Length: 147
Image (tube, rainbow, N blue to C red; front, top):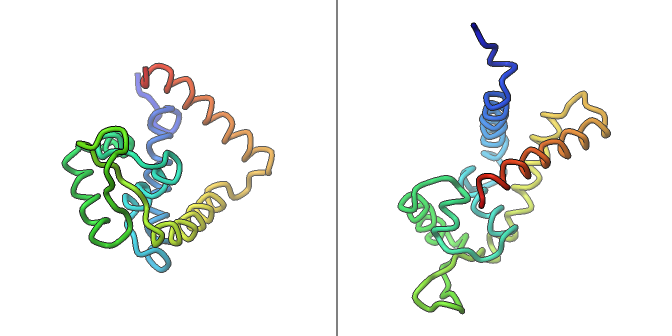
């Protein structure tokens, strides 16, 4: 039995993510001096606050060594800093710098532009419904994966 990729949930979700990321890269080149991965780091830090590198690697779905290299580059660029964890001095956490906080707004504008393009032809109600449905999907899967 032949399956249609266009009708497969996992394929569609993955492909939408891939296309969204590529479009973000295209638009960000002229306005944000950061890679998509670096923008994701800032978005997670803005959402979750200071986190350790292991948690950041988990959020980014990369190996800890890859997250460490990414953090090193961002520290060198002045985007983030490592600070001692107040609850455990042996551990460092990653925190955004004021430079990153100023740039995050520009990165969000790029993301908003990509969303507008992706939702072209959708009514406001349809766009809100799609977001609500995706939040439900995420909730269902989070209960199973993040136990």
